[in-house]
Length: 302
Length: 254
Image (cartoon, rainbow over all chains, first blue to last red):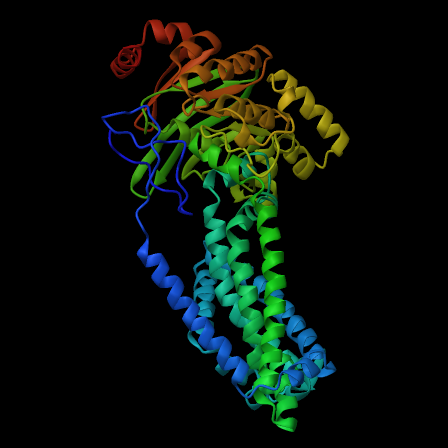
């Protein structure tokens, strides 16, 4: 393509290896004069102004920074972090188990199982998380007693603690979303893989566990990582039913001392820390499952 | 030699489409049979039915002493549970057109997967056997590679080793060279010739007429879901009795 200049690199540096090919002197390296990128200067200026305004607002606003420091490591906050992490982890485990079950049911040949999975996914995706949380926490109004003949018989209010209520609400809600993720992961593995696994004599369960799921992980893990990070923040809703997570801790303090914004900043700090750690972990897990990505691509091309 | 495969009156439908119509065929132990025919003639479907990857709608397939997918009791055929169907499949090797190696496992892991998981073979023994098989298909140096790092021909030879690792009484080949670049076909056919000489029972769906002539004891010509003609390789290729076979062979040789 004569006369076509190679596109500039993304960072704006000159592509020095490839001189612009002109009819006059195709083999001579000319120095390159880039056009001035006015839009870039304008956007940098605008962003700096906005940042300055925000920083100034925090600096002159009525924020008592020593109070932030004072409560950053208070035991109420530290317990809040622990409880947030515990609830997140348990709800995700429950969500993934339910999601896997619903995904397998959704891919089943049995129409009853398929319908049940579809119904589960519809109901729990349709209702707001807060509503589900309140329903689970108030389960005793519908089922006053949890009763299995000869095994248990207890008052529902004894069983549904704030933790259990939140775990059920978020875990079951999460399962509805995760099942779609897992289902698309299972579908991403070629049908030939099932054939091959069965041809060497694997049962369906063996093929799923040893061949299909490990490959589906590559598709499943990134969105589940995102959803785990989402769950960290979802758990803040559980403060509404008195579960002692980060927001609950912050509220407990500012109801007493009135330092609302200071405590919210403390909470914001800790959420950022937890999410930053999870993001780091997620990138490592993704790398693990991507090990054999290149081979997959080549095989599909073959 | 006794028959190891007996296919009797098998029909298979996909919705309205009749993929197999009243197909009957027997294969003796140690025999190499090639199935040729135009695409859509039911060749691959027949192979998949023998391995029970597809369920048949009528007729009966016997491999060895067993009816595939069923158990005869009290004059009725009872469908076998998944575990026993899987056990039947474990004795029948299959090599696919698209290789279908497990991309997340290395070459040697692909080969020991069946012995390890399905047979419960001790790992050491499975590894030793895998290494022997890799030498047999000329890929001993690639044991630690991932399938994606191999050429198509090499992948297919690994797939053959994977099938052989289960020590099958019968190996089915579903167009094993159709997905390969032309220059890679030879190496795979060479491995298959060696297997044919070693007295393995093989049923090969192929477009390689030259291979069929040289390696097959018998050739089956299929068209529109039926076995049109079946006979000794040389004879069927030299003097096809059915006009449809003549037509097909003429087109292939062009």
